[in-house]
Length: 69
Image (tube, rainbow, N blue to C red; front, side, top):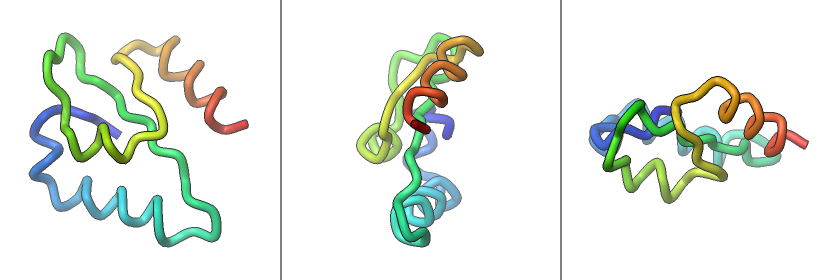
């Protein structure tokens, strides 16, 4: 999920985190994607994330492959 600093205030983001953690038999991993050039990211997303990556196709795909194994 996008980890921009304004995600902290998003009900939608908080619901997605809750669903990933509570609504499945096995919790789903959360990948925090840092927006291009962002200096700050959402503390809510950062704390919930399994992993963090920068906004780059290769890093996103590589991390998805890594955490999905």
